[in-house]
Amino acid sequence: MRKPDRLELANLPTPIWSLDGMDYCRENARLFMKRDDFTGFEMGGNKVRKLEYALKQGMDQGAEVFITCGGIQSNHVRAVASAAALFSRKAHLVLSGSDMQPDGNYFLDLLFGASVQFVSEEDYKYRRQQLMEEIRASYTRRGIQAYILPEGASNGIGFFGYYQAYEEIMMQERLLREPFDTICVAVGSGGTYAGLYAANEMYGCRKRIVGFNIYDKNADAEMQIAGIIEEGLRVGGCRNRISYDRIHIVYDYVGEGYGITSSQVMDFIHKTALQTGILLDPVNTGKALYGVVSELYKRNPLLTGNVLYIHTGGQFGIFPQKNRFCL
Ligand SMILES: Cc1ncc(COP(=O)(O)O)c(C=O)c1O
Image (tube, rainbow, N blue to C red; front, side, top):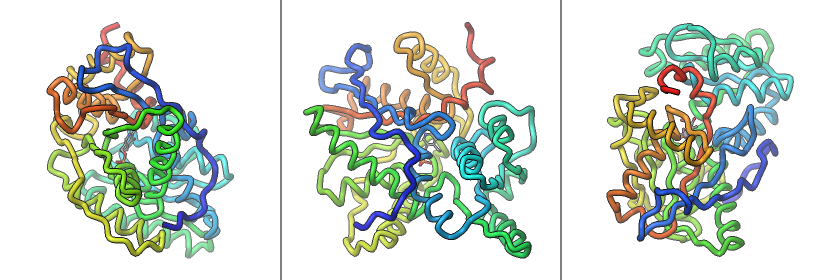
């Protein structure tokens, strides 16, 4: 696999912590956490690893504007807004829904000077790519080069972020002398999972890669992930065929839907904060780690041995929901 060039934006390698001291472990499983929320602050979490590749491609193409899309509390969108400010570019954001009091990630998008365009949920769902292309065309007409990043930068270029993260984990397990049997991660647009899964297959490591869908229980994440991997293999000039039979996605912890968090998950986030000092967010990592811990309690055979959960960041998303905590 030929990885494309990337920018160096993230603080790598991110540390791996043992969670042995917490009551999450079972006799047949130990839980570890890779702190990918430490990749950075404004550009923290999993997004920055994908942006290292995607923004490099955009800048090499002479982009003066980065166009991307997401929900109003999207971490990806906020990271792009921050990167645009860092590189003296402009961010043009297509957000699903309608304007509201700036808070959390949306507040930061505005603080970083991004242009924001709201579209209906319907248009977002079915026409977001077309809308972004129309926006790009309007920049082109004015002689301005613009580059489109899809939702979550989950495409064949962003894919390399977590392909490379998997290689980082292989290096760390050699140093830590703790081979991981299972890697767990939240699944939204699928790019994070896709990179991990593909690297696991390409290196023939046979770890179990278990995704916890936080997006939509009716989504076909498996198909989405396979599409991202195929595109990634093409970008990397790799002719190997890989099997998709070992994709494991758990859909039981999506709850009522994307961004809607149950009181059990809110309690879990609060308990984790009190007992560990670790901050999760209600949209992604709170739901996903709640799922991991619940499956450990149920003794799910996929989660045995050394289980590594990747904390993918997103903590700014807690602020718009602060009223749901009883302090
Ligand atoms: C904090 C956080 N974790 C995990 C995910 C899921 O990553 P991906 O979109 O690559 O599946 C997202 C994005 O949806 C996120 O913002």
